[in-house]
Length: 403
Image (tube, rainbow, N blue to C red; front, side):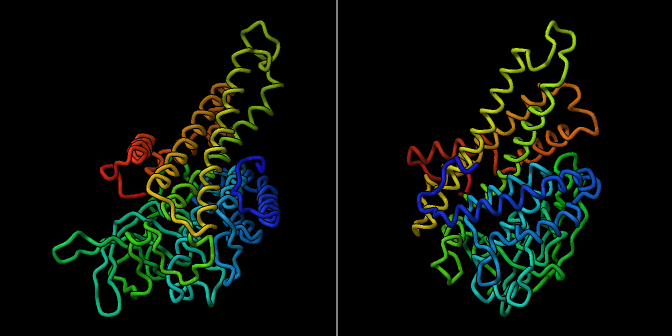
């Protein structure tokens, strides 16, 4: 996918590293595909998948280099996750979330980062940014209580990041994020779904856990790019928070749509066109039209996602936090990419026909997973379109604070 848009500041070395990492991911696709049913059955990525991805260095994409990480750009993160999803959408989603939660943690002050990685550089972070917890100020920090569902990959994490609300005297509640060690919370087995069932997106539960002040970060500050990290010369950790948090979720959908297209292109030429005068399904004009449209939609989805990544990465390289309209555009590009991936897969499902719904067919798993993933609230097309349209007109507020 190197032919797609890239940030102007990307060097040959950046692209060589990206190609190498995507190549490592591609080598894992057969393993992930072979384990896809087990991943569904176990309701989280099987340990063999996670170990292979770790051994390939693909769980360190967004960890700071000073802790042994690769500290790549957002485009690289997208391409690697997209490649993994060609083998297993659930595994790619889990890895994508573990990587981005690592990026979240790298925005905290150095003391918090040291807590996580100084003695154990391979520590992973999972979590949920939903504001389903309360943080009560106490001496030296906060007491945090809450329940946070949809914490993908939490079974493979040593730390968690979760959203909180703190009541204030006479003002609006303060919104925050906190970092809590995995052994100080419990993971409730709550993930029973028909799509993306292998992501292990269970519920984090905290009961009056003490969180020191240096592991608390204001949500309002973080959405405005006012990060706690002192390492302000590192472009990756200057990237815009909400655009990154939204965009990284697109990559598994790109890979699943590509996998559906690849599967149809592999099978259709050899299939008979039953109940027609055509010898082969590939000779049917409707099939040819649907395939062309599906391929164009898959490519369009990639273009929107990689355009958003290029703009995020370039702004981070230049030390510029994007304007409200720029951040709204990133959400719009994200929603459009998801819409196109979803539409392409539905077309391909029709081309593949009734065989799509055989329990042993990877097509039905791709379809279920993509439908479930695309229902994530950050992808809602009407919200993203209204948000972008308002900001294009210079109108702010009234849609969502998540921008």
